[in-house]
Amino acid sequence: MIRTKAYAAQKPSAPLAPWEFDRRDPGDKDVLIDVTHCGICHSDIHQVRDEWGGATFPMVPGHEIVGRVSKVGAKVTRFKVGDLAGVGCMVDSCRDCAPCRKGLEQFCAKGAAFSYNSTEMDRKTPTYGGYSNRIVCDEAFTLRIPAGLDPAGAAPLLCAGITTWSPLRHWKAGKGTRLGVVGLGGLGHMAVKLGAALGCEVTMLSTSPGKEADARRLGAAAFALTKDPETFKKLAGRFDLIIDTISAPHDYNAYLSMVAVDGAMVVVGVPPAPAPVHAFALIGGRKTLAGSLIGGIAETQEMLDFCGKHGIVSDVEVIPMSKVNEAYERTLKADVRYRFVLDTSTI
Ligand code: NAP
Ligand code: ZN
Ligand code: ZN
Image 1: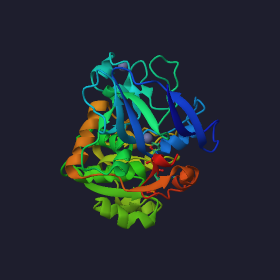
Image 2 (image 1 turned 90 degrees about the horizontal axis):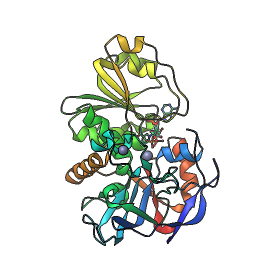
Image 3 (image 1 turned 30 degrees about the vertical axis):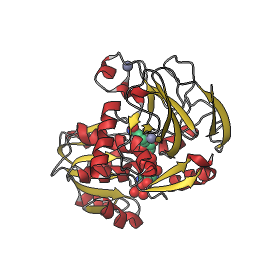
Image 4 (image 1 turned 30 degrees about the horizontal axis):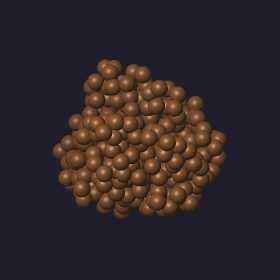
C-alpha cells in the first residue's frame, strides 16, 4: 500500500485537517501520480457540507488534480515516469454500458467511480481525491496535460474546463453564437475563455459589478449586472445559449427570458435545493432548459488539447494547504479570481 498524506473532513461541515490513508499499489494498468496541484471546485464545498445528501466521511475532496507520474504499471502504454498527468472527476466506470461505449462515462449506467465521495467499481473501496500528495489511477482515466501549460493553471481544466467545454460542444457553440455566461467564478471564467476561443460573442451575466473589467479581459464582449432588473428587459430573447454556473438558489425563469427562440439554457451549477420552472418560461420561444455533467474522458482530452493549442489555462490563486478552509469561505462569498489551486507539496 502507498501511505498518502491528505487533508480531509471527518464529518459534514467539519474543517479540513491533515489526515493519512493508504492507496492501492499501482496495478498493471495504473499510474502513480505525485500530485503537485489541485483546484478547489465549489462542488468540493457542497459535498463537504453534505448539501446534496449521501456524503461519506472521512472525505478527501479534490477533482482537479495535476502531478508528475512517478511509477507506471507493466501494461501502461500512454504514460511514462516524469510525465505531467491529470485526473478529473472520475477514476473509473463500467466501460461496457451504452453511455460508456459512447464515451459518456460520466453517465455510466452502473454509476461512474467518482474521484472522491464515491467508491471504486467494486462499490466497496472508498475513493479519495486530490487534496493529497499521491493518487493511483487507471491510465484509461488519466489525462495528458499538454506541454507548455502551467500545471497550476491547468488543474482547473479537469473540472471547470470540461464542465463548460462539454455543453459548448454539444450545443455547437461557434462563430457568431450569442453566448450568455451566468456567474463569474471557476466555471464561469472558463466558459468565457473557451466560448470566446470558439468564436462566440460572449456576454457575462454577473451579480458583481467589480468583475466587469476581468470579464472583458477574459474574452467577454459585453457585461450585464443581474442585480439590475432592467438587464432582463434589455436582453430579453438575446442568447442562443446560456450556461448557468450559479451555485446558489436563483430564479431560472428570469434567466430563461433572455434565451432566444429555439435557444437553450444549460444548467451546470447545482444549488442545494430544487427551484420551480414555469411552463410559460419555455413554451414562448420553444426554449430548451437542459443540464450537463462534466464530460467524458475523450472529450476531456479534446478540451485539454484545445487549451494546449490556444494557450488557455485558468486564472488561479495558488495557496498552501493550510489556507484551504479560508479559501472555502472566500469562494462562498464569490471572492475568488477565479480559481483557488492548492499547492499540494505543502501538505
Ligand atoms: P464558484 O467559483 O463559487 O462560482 C459561482 C459563481 O456564481 C460566483 O462567483 C458568483 O458569480 C455566482 N453566484 C454565487 N452565488 C450567487 C447567488 N446567490 N446569486 C447569483 N449568482 C451567484 O463556483 P464554481 O466552482 O464555478 O461552481 C459553480 C457551480 O457549478 C457549483 O454549484 C458547483 O457544484 C457546480 N458544478 C457543476 C458541475 C457539473 O458537472 N455540472 C461541475 C463542477 C461544478 P458572480 O459574482 O459573477 O455573480
Ligand atoms: Zn468540480
Ligand atoms: Zn458504464
